[in-house]
Image (cartoon, rainbow, N blue to C red; front, side):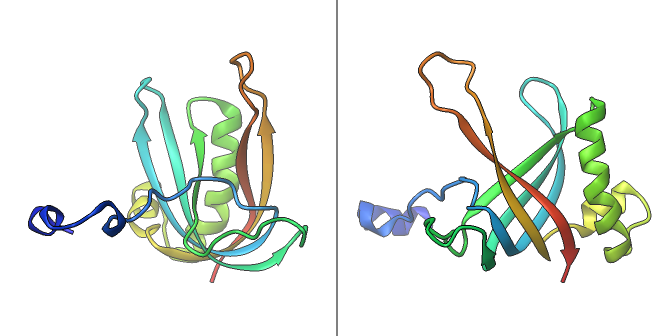
Length: 145
């Protein structure tokens, strides 16, 4: 939509904001884009941005299934050993599969990759009193399709 179209549009004509919730535990086909960036707090992170393409198998059939097109992400803070280690686990699988010999090539080639992954939700208690815990996604067993 451009500004000319917006002038004659209503609220119903605008797309809803996509959710960034972790999908239910299970196996998924995903679209993956990887990028490196500096967060507002100055920390360097690698972000794996996922879009749900399809659910192969949901761990708990009673849960609401993930919507096709649902967005979620993982962030790896590379300035600490744990974040860098988890990033390395994923990069070690993906880099050879896409023919990247260094990280510059990896970030250039890792856009819109079709992958398979196992999603597991992890709960992190909020530091703010009265706030509900936050649910994040951890993706393992990545395979380029």
